[in-house]
Image 1: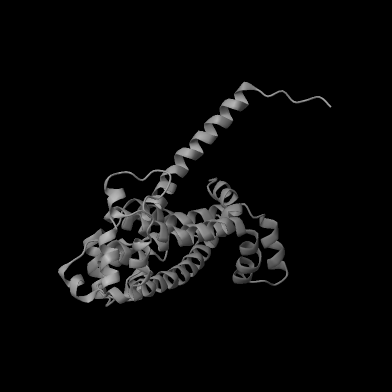
Image 2: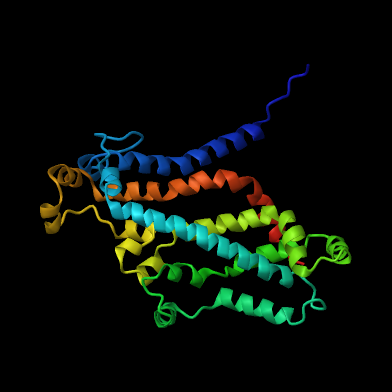
Amino acid sequence: MKKKKIKISDVVILAVLILSAIVCIFPIWNTVCISFSDRTAVNQGAVGFWPVNFTVAAYKSMMSDGLFWRSFGVSVMRVAVGTILNIVMCITMGYPLSKSPKQFKGKKMYIWFLIFTMLFNGGMVPTYILIKNLGLLNNFWSLILPTAVPVFNVILIMNFFKTVPAALEESAFLDGANPWQVMWKIYVPLSKPSIATVTLFSVVNHWNSFMDGKLYITDKAKMPLQTYIQSLSASVSVNDMTTLTAEQLNDKMSMSSLSFNSAKALVAIVPLLIIYPFLQKYFVKGIVIGAVKE
């Protein structure tokens, strides 16, 4: 059997890919090491590939707090409710917009309206006033409703629906199906890659968002995880001196703000790392087909 010759170009490409992987992975690994290192080592910049003076003080400080787990539950609920609402709105808007102007009169007006909202918005202050006047301050729905219709995701779904053969829809209508049945029983099952992509976008957006929680939620018991974590600090206040136990105070004093922030970042990305592998196989196909415009 003739051996395949190794090309220099293949070696160069492999070397570049390995180097790129190291460049991407090292900051994450360094963050892990910093989160498990003590204050002195972190402040001296002595942490590299391995933790120095191993400690879990940063994680204990977060995990022992009941509000941490409460905010975690708020974020999980937000992701579940927000993502379902996003998907329903994207599908119900994308289906009629995927039709020709003859089938859906006024389509161009709706398309231009959607594009306008992608380029311009009301601004932070008017949005806050609106949320306040609706009585949604310190309300769970203030985290959901403002982003209920993600326009970019609607366009992805719309373009994917355009790739579904029109003959399938015509056959369903001849069999007595109505538009709702056609949409949910034909278009949705055939559009799993695009829907999975939109689902991933929605999950990441809801999980990572912290600014809306900072603006609309003042009660810590109702804050989403990212907002609560952002509000935490590794510094020891006078109040801590009287409320913390000796062990908790020692943990506070032994960790650096950088190690605490590193721990926060790692805790925040773990759920996404768990979810992504299940949706990754649909991601590329959904983006490529959904991004095609006719």
